[in-house]
Length: 333
Length: 84
Image 1 (cartoon, one colour):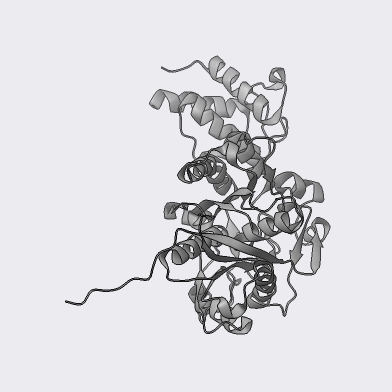
Image 2: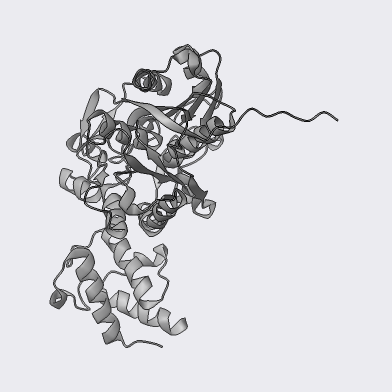
């Protein structure tokens, strides 16, 4: 009987380069408050957000992904033609089909790379990064482009004072390739669909189609429930992730939590008591919450500014709608 | 073992002091969390979570909005801990 043959496995994978795209238009809290009953002070206190970026009306999810991907490929020194797999984490590619990743793979000039979108909302990038690592180690892929991109302004209700100030647009990307030493640690991940209504859409597109006079589907969030879940459970997820990589919190150089809310970051820092030398991303202040794009945007900001050195050990954690989370330790390019 | 309302008030005052830095002497039964003690919705979540740990009770999100004053929270915790 014939046996199935598998490709040779690899000892590890690592992030070879990062790239980011931040849309041109800067939106202040004052501008947000033109449509909601709030204030600059209130928004800063509740979220730490000072300003955020909005994509142009004619700027698509794949347009933004293209920009970030081009920079990530250049920084990795990998040609688009060497990319054999494209993973795009997003919840705002506004087509049920085809995927953003297939369009991106073509526009970048890959040789018809494998392509799929990953829908895990704010945890999406870390989910996709875990897939990339597994694909490279298994020998299924050699160079994987991993993108987190969102145009949340397409699904935000600008009159909802609970969410409109939080969400924004952007794209971040990394290239993952083979490594002799593991540069991406084991993923710690999970979901709690019992809390699926904590971050959801006001209705489905099918419901809207049957009642087009209704307000179109928009993102809605039970802020307190999400906050409770995040500050209640993510510190333990961080501890388990570091332990899974055979490290301790003292070994960390960089902490990149999903940029959900500065207060969540502060709470995690209090709970984890990270050493003073750890560089902590606070990208949300000028970027807002960009869901799947938040971790790669924050990562790129630290890498490209030199705040995080090459080879540094970083803990990434994404968490959000689902409620889903994923975390891993990585070494920086 | 059920705790007296005075013990719960003292414990809760310690939590509010830790979360928001409010002086313990200012934290009395009739004070409202939002207006008098300046505890916003996210800080209230942290107060509730710490209270759940300290008193071994469960305070669901649906109840939190009914806890307007410190006294409301003390009564809720007292009742919930009797039941547990």
